Image (cartoon, rainbow, N blue to C red; front, side, top):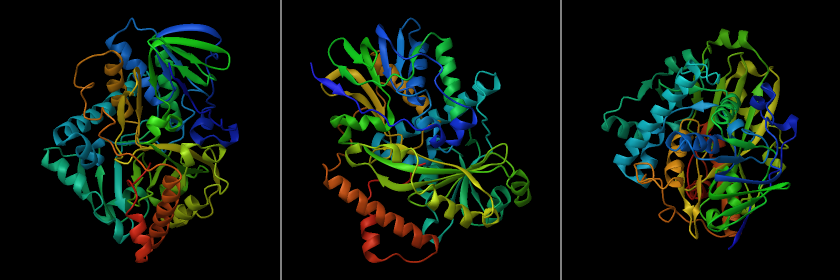
Length: 472
């Protein structure tokens, strides 16, 4: 049977890891795979998707033997590098409806609200200390071109009888965020921020306590497919009848998936702790904030008074292959710092103590997809969270668990299952050249629109060729 070859990650140096990972000294807690081992289900990837999938499988079939193989350590990928923003899928109601239909989209959006409640319960009962603060998610405009970006999703949400969003005045935004840069927008009250790395290692501890075998520092080199699959690492092999690929952007190594997947990077910075200054300007709680640029800004203040400030960079990976530059950019967050100073001029003198990058697995519809490989019905995958996964990967875990266990239920029949209905991207090098041109145009358009200038006609035309909008 064919062998699936996986791409090996460029493991980030300790100093290049995210603030979140460095903050808690995150690292491997389990031993690498050594020798021969067996499992009922093998999961490749120890981030949110892989861990939630393992937990959901055990909820349905407690006797299942599950082994997770993680290339670095749990949470070292996107799960520990993101902006820590928690909001429901109602912000993407229109995008989900375009893929799955309005009724199914509503069900999934409601499920994401239930995910937030689940996270809240895990923190409340002491299972995972994740610094969850449900002080709201602000979806805002800081330029004329961004005004009303939320209108369609809000309208559809209200038509469905859900009261998720409230409109904000400029004064209300400034009183909560400490900035006058954004002057219009909406807030989702039952949303907020989280410490992403604490959630990741908390899920790891929960999975271990429930009997999941986890081997970190065990990158999978290849998978020999068949009725029983054989996963090979540098020092061992794992055989399993069912395999879940939960490796985020690294799934671009598989040609069948790369036809629908492109990889971009996002840059994030974290300032020194300045709680007194943030108190002075009125930024006091754990709200998460976004503006509506195509390469969206996303930011929060941590409980101890750092500002974590992220932005899509426009970097694109040729053939989906990315290396160390996707761990930390040579520019060290220069564009983010410029935008930080635009949004918070009073922080110009504050040191930026951390900067990092991370790959994002994107699909054109900006809605994740789940399925099995076409010629391998026992090899399943989930991909395309497009940088929005904290309240969404728990749902992805439910979908994958039902697929793996062969259950016929609302999750295996979910409208997000099935890749054949999804957009196929152009082949390389056309895709890469086009992506560079389009994303370069988007950067220039953003820079002009932030200053309320009209971009040139060519820039406007090229930016409209983009397959989707924001990543955060």
